[in-house]
Length: 147
Image 1 (cartoon, rainbow, N blue to C red):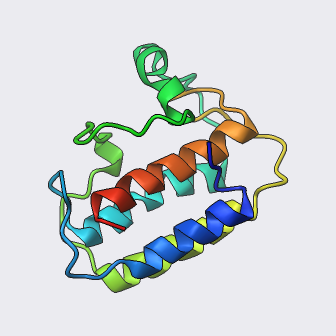
Image 2 (cartoon, rainbow, N blue to C red):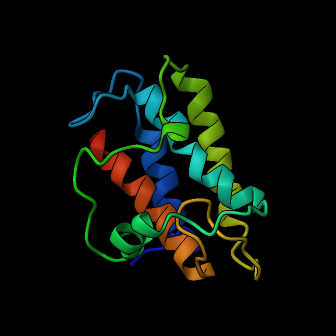
Image 3 (tube, helix red, strand yellow):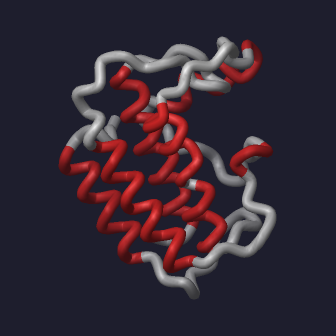
Protein backbone atom coordinates (compact mmCIF):
# COMPACT_ATOMS: atom_id res chain seq x y z
CA UNK A 1 0.00 0.00 0.00
CA UNK A 2 1.34 3.39 -0.96
CA UNK A 3 1.82 6.10 1.65
CA UNK A 4 1.93 9.86 1.33
CA UNK A 5 5.08 9.68 3.46
CA UNK A 6 6.84 7.81 0.64
CA UNK A 7 8.60 10.25 -1.72
CA UNK A 8 7.53 8.43 -4.91
CA UNK A 9 3.87 8.30 -3.85
CA UNK A 10 4.00 11.95 -2.78
CA UNK A 11 5.43 13.01 -6.17
CA UNK A 12 2.85 10.88 -7.99
CA UNK A 13 -0.03 12.53 -6.12
CA UNK A 14 1.37 16.03 -6.68
CA UNK A 15 1.69 15.31 -10.42
CA UNK A 16 -1.86 13.99 -10.62
CA UNK A 17 -3.23 17.04 -8.78
CA UNK A 18 -1.31 19.27 -11.22
CA UNK A 19 -3.02 17.46 -14.12
CA UNK A 20 -6.50 18.41 -12.91
CA UNK A 21 -8.35 21.02 -14.97
CA UNK A 22 -11.22 23.27 -13.93
CA UNK A 23 -13.33 21.64 -16.67
CA UNK A 24 -12.85 18.07 -15.37
CA UNK A 25 -16.06 16.27 -14.51
CA UNK A 26 -16.45 13.53 -11.94
CA UNK A 27 -17.03 10.00 -13.12
CA UNK A 28 -19.24 9.46 -10.05
CA UNK A 29 -20.67 11.57 -7.24
CA UNK A 30 -22.01 15.11 -7.19
CA UNK A 31 -18.91 17.22 -6.44
CA UNK A 32 -17.39 19.59 -8.94
CA UNK A 33 -13.62 19.45 -9.34
CA UNK A 34 -13.34 22.65 -7.26
CA UNK A 35 -15.39 21.11 -4.46
CA UNK A 36 -13.31 17.92 -4.64
CA UNK A 37 -9.97 19.72 -4.20
CA UNK A 38 -11.46 21.62 -1.24
CA UNK A 39 -12.85 18.38 0.22
CA UNK A 40 -9.44 16.67 -0.05
CA UNK A 41 -7.92 19.39 2.13
CA UNK A 42 -10.02 18.46 5.18
CA UNK A 43 -8.33 15.19 6.24
CA UNK A 44 -4.90 16.65 5.49
CA UNK A 45 -5.65 19.57 7.82
CA UNK A 46 -6.76 17.13 10.54
CA UNK A 47 -3.47 15.25 10.30
CA UNK A 48 -1.28 18.35 10.05
CA UNK A 49 -2.91 20.12 13.01
CA UNK A 50 -2.67 16.97 15.18
CA UNK A 51 -5.04 18.63 17.66
CA UNK A 52 -6.00 16.60 20.67
CA UNK A 53 -9.65 15.62 20.77
CA UNK A 54 -11.73 13.99 23.44
CA UNK A 55 -13.40 11.63 20.99
CA UNK A 56 -12.00 8.15 20.71
CA UNK A 57 -13.69 7.65 17.37
CA UNK A 58 -17.02 6.24 16.33
CA UNK A 59 -17.13 2.54 17.24
CA UNK A 60 -19.43 1.63 14.34
CA UNK A 61 -17.29 3.57 11.82
CA UNK A 62 -14.09 2.07 13.22
CA UNK A 63 -15.49 -1.45 13.13
CA UNK A 64 -16.85 -1.28 9.57
CA UNK A 65 -14.53 1.13 7.77
CA UNK A 66 -11.22 1.66 9.55
CA UNK A 67 -9.34 -1.26 7.97
CA UNK A 68 -10.35 -0.05 4.50
CA UNK A 69 -8.44 3.18 5.16
CA UNK A 70 -5.06 1.56 4.73
CA UNK A 71 -5.39 -1.61 2.67
CA UNK A 72 -4.82 -2.11 -1.07
CA UNK A 73 -8.48 -2.53 -1.99
CA UNK A 74 -9.84 0.63 -3.71
CA UNK A 75 -12.80 2.34 -2.06
CA UNK A 76 -16.12 1.88 -3.75
CA UNK A 77 -17.72 4.77 -5.59
CA UNK A 78 -20.28 7.07 -3.93
CA UNK A 79 -19.24 6.50 -0.32
CA UNK A 80 -21.00 8.88 2.08
CA UNK A 81 -19.12 12.04 3.02
CA UNK A 82 -18.78 13.26 6.58
CA UNK A 83 -20.88 16.44 7.01
CA UNK A 84 -17.88 18.57 8.08
CA UNK A 85 -16.04 17.62 4.86
CA UNK A 86 -18.98 18.09 2.49
CA UNK A 87 -18.62 21.01 0.07
CA UNK A 88 -22.05 22.60 -0.22
CA UNK A 89 -21.13 25.68 -2.24
CA UNK A 90 -19.01 26.29 -5.32
CA UNK A 91 -15.25 26.61 -4.86
CA UNK A 92 -12.58 28.40 -6.87
CA UNK A 93 -10.67 25.57 -8.49
CA UNK A 94 -7.34 27.34 -9.01
CA UNK A 95 -6.98 28.69 -5.48
CA UNK A 96 -8.28 25.49 -3.84
CA UNK A 97 -5.90 23.34 -5.89
CA UNK A 98 -2.97 25.54 -4.81
CA UNK A 99 -3.98 25.14 -1.16
CA UNK A 100 -4.33 21.37 -1.63
CA UNK A 101 -0.87 21.07 -3.14
CA UNK A 102 0.63 22.98 -0.23
CA UNK A 103 -1.19 20.81 2.32
CA UNK A 104 0.00 17.64 0.58
CA UNK A 105 3.54 18.97 0.83
CA UNK A 106 3.12 19.88 4.52
CA UNK A 107 1.71 16.45 5.32
CA UNK A 108 4.51 14.67 3.46
CA UNK A 109 7.05 16.62 5.55
CA UNK A 110 5.58 15.01 8.69
CA UNK A 111 7.17 11.70 7.70
CA UNK A 112 9.29 11.77 10.89
CA UNK A 113 6.47 12.73 13.30
CA UNK A 114 6.30 10.15 16.06
CA UNK A 115 3.25 11.21 18.05
CA UNK A 116 -0.23 11.38 16.52
CA UNK A 117 -3.40 12.30 18.36
CA UNK A 118 -6.44 10.13 17.66
CA UNK A 119 -8.39 10.84 14.49
CA UNK A 120 -11.81 12.38 15.31
CA UNK A 121 -13.69 9.55 13.54
CA UNK A 122 -11.31 6.59 13.43
CA UNK A 123 -9.53 6.91 16.77
CA UNK A 124 -5.91 5.84 17.09
CA UNK A 125 -3.99 5.45 13.82
CA UNK A 126 -0.33 4.58 13.61
CA UNK A 127 2.10 6.80 11.70
CA UNK A 128 2.03 4.26 8.85
CA UNK A 129 -1.78 4.20 8.81
CA UNK A 130 -1.97 8.02 8.61
CA UNK A 131 0.27 8.05 5.52
CA UNK A 132 -1.64 5.26 3.80
CA UNK A 133 -5.04 6.77 4.62
CA UNK A 134 -4.07 10.15 3.17
CA UNK A 135 -2.71 8.56 -0.01
CA UNK A 136 -5.79 6.38 -0.44
CA UNK A 137 -8.21 9.30 0.05
CA UNK A 138 -6.42 11.45 -2.51
CA UNK A 139 -6.11 8.54 -4.95
CA UNK A 140 -9.85 7.83 -4.64
CA UNK A 141 -10.83 11.38 -5.58
CA UNK A 142 -8.22 11.77 -8.28
CA UNK A 143 -9.56 8.59 -9.90
CA UNK A 144 -13.04 10.08 -9.53
CA UNK A 145 -11.90 12.92 -11.81
CA UNK A 146 -9.93 10.73 -14.20
CA UNK A 147 -6.33 11.46 -13.17
